[in-house]
Image (cartoon, rainbow, N blue to C red; front, side, top):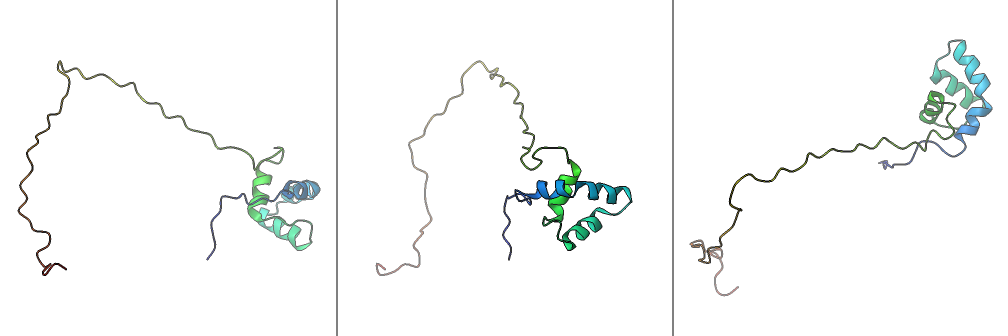
Length: 114
């Protein structure tokens, strides 16, 4: 069984591996080769050691200094202002101290003090 982690699929040297092969990658893309085939070719020839997922992340935005440290956009939830109750009298609670009748015996099967 594999554990899911929140780690990025990219090691610290993926960008440098990509930049070392950037000209060749660009040439192969212009020739019409598929991204998966380019990745497989570079791995097979020992020019790169990154996952395909990391390769795609860098390929998507090669000019970004650190594409893996981008934070997700945070959503701010807008909460509408609370309107005060329009009733004239304040809400109240009155406690009735009389206990509720209980006719159920919880220990029907219990005999002999056990």
